[in-house]
Amino acid sequence: MAGATKPVHAKAMARELGGYLPTLLLHFQDPSPDVAKASWMAFVSCAPFLGLQDLAWETEVRRLLAEASDTWHPRLMGQVCGQLAQRKDPTLLDTLMRGLPRSMHCAQEGIRLAACQLAGVLAETMDAQRLEKLDWEPLLQASQNPRGQEN
Image 1 (cartoon, rainbow, N blue to C red):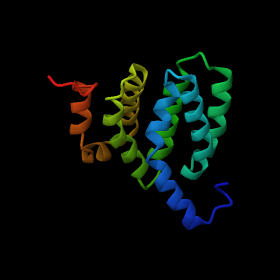
Image 2: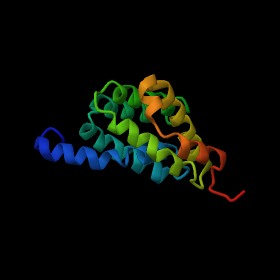
Image 3: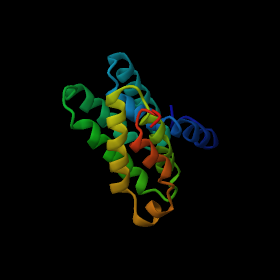
């Protein structure tokens, strides 16, 4: 579908879908099997628009072969961030980072844990210059108060 889309439409679609990338990645770990499967299917469908074609296929295989394993998810997040870090345009990496504080307030512990893991992967993946430009305050506040509770 992504290959048949006109470039101008594909770019618009990529911008729109990029906003959902953090949610899709994190909800692979959703406690509801239906939500996890829907997130996985959406990622596989959207990945080509985001320039992550190889990861979509690999994700499908890993999900089928290692559903019970906890190691495939952090590895996938690392591969997604690694591919995005190699691009000249850091927009999707920035989108991932901006989506994390909201996910750290999720009621589901697995999503909060995945958000913390993704923050670590992003910090390891980004170059020092990009890390310095990021606004870390929302992420730090969310990590100190992960459920959004008043102190």
